[in-house]
Every structure is written in structure tokens, then in C-alpha cells.
Amino acid sequence: MDMDALKRQAAARALEEVRDGMKLGLGTGSTAKHFVELLGDKVRAGMKVIGVPTSEATRADAIRCGVPLTTLDEIDHLDLTIDGADEIDPALNLIKGGGGALLREKIVAAASDRMIVIADDSKWVDVLGRFPLPVEVIPFGLAATQAAMARAFTDAGVSGQMVIRKGKDGHAFVTDGGHWIIDAHLGRIGDPPRLAGLLSVIPGVVEHGLFIGLGSVAVLAGAQGIRVVERR
Ligand SMILES: O=C(CO)[C@H](O)[C@H](O)COP(=O)(O)O
Image 1 (cartoon, protein in one colour):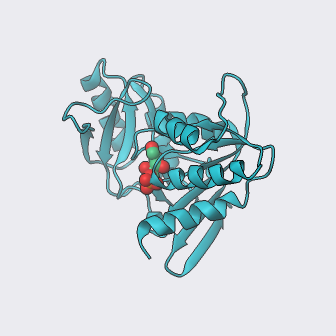
Image 2 (spheres, helix red, strand yellow):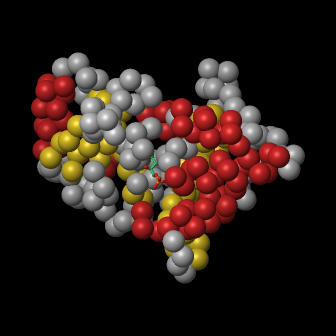
């Protein structure tokens, strides 16, 4: 089975957790897009839900699929967020931000009672860090921010190249919030909560892609079927 079919299976399994009347966080990326499409089918069949999109891309998808939307200005709390991830470890720590939406994704996940992470099982890893860690930064003072990030990496026992993400036009990729992303190629992140804490206090860092304690359940689709892993 191809990867895209696995992503859709994970999305379909997560949809079983959605109940009438729920306020939902809608993730970003190819797996989350499947979820939004399947949710649109349910809405057309009469299900009443309302969603908060985590990116302009997801907003457009949700509108196309007929999913009613609101914002975290109008409501301050969500029942459930369903989102993809770039890596998931056994503690359900995540690396997110491959699609550049990590800031809104984290705000939405943090406003939710539960977060279901949907993925094909290639995203499951023993230790986070093979996927470059996205860090959303303010362009002002970039060299100083990168120097502070390098010190944080040393303190957390990791190291690696920092690459400013480029868009298709060859210029710096700009997030929905107007910031840039540095992809940090760290290899193995032995203590993700420690690194998360060290990055969070750097002034030029808007947010980082380590999601610690936010994922409640992971739904992983693989050749052998679907595995549901709950955070202990
Ligand atoms: O964090 C994300 C976007 O910022 C995505 O959830 C992550 O990149 C996974 O994407 P995909 O489902 O396309 O593999």
C-alpha cells in the first residue's frame, strides 16, 4: 500500500473519535488534509462540528470541503485537535513543522483537551532528531539568535547544522505569521524536553517544533494495519 493510502487510513481512524458538536483543531500537511476531506464528507452527511485551522492552507482546504470554521479569538478552547507529525517517539514527543505551520499548530494543540497525531508508521522513531528540527525565528537579529540556539544545542548535548529554509522561489520561506524557519540537523535528541525548554527562552525564537506533552494518542497506519498508541 502506498504512503498516501496509509495516511488516509490513519485519518479515517481518527475520525471515529469525532463526535457531534465537537470543536476541532485542524492540522496541516498531507495527512491532516485527508482528515479534513473525510470530515467534510461527515459534515455533508449532517454532522455538526466547528474547526480551527492551523494554517492558511488548511483554512482553504476546510472551506473547499464545507467544514465550518471559527477562530481562537471567538472561542478559547477546543475538544480535540487532529494533526500530523514529522516524527513521533514512544513518549509521544513530536517533531512538527515540516510544513511550516508549527506555531499555529502548537497554539491550537495547547488549546485542546486532546490531540490525536495521525501518521503513516514511518514517522515512528525510537529517538527524535533524524528529521531536522524546525525552529521559527524572527528575521531581525538572526545571527545572534542562531548563536543562542547553538549554545542551547550544546547545553542539551546535541549539535548540527542550521539551515534557513527556502521557499520554491529560492528566497527564505515565510510562515503564515511572517517569520522564518531554521531547520536544525541534530541527528539524535537525547532529551527533547530539555532542548524544548532551552529553545523556548531565546528571544528571537518564536516557537520550535518540539511538541512535548501535547500528543494524547498516536494513530499509526502501516502495512500490518493500524496501531493506536496512548501517551502514558
Ligand atoms: O507539522 C506539520 C506541518 O507543519 C505536519 O503535520 C508534518 O510536516 C507532517 O506532514 P505530512 O502529514 O505531510 O507528512
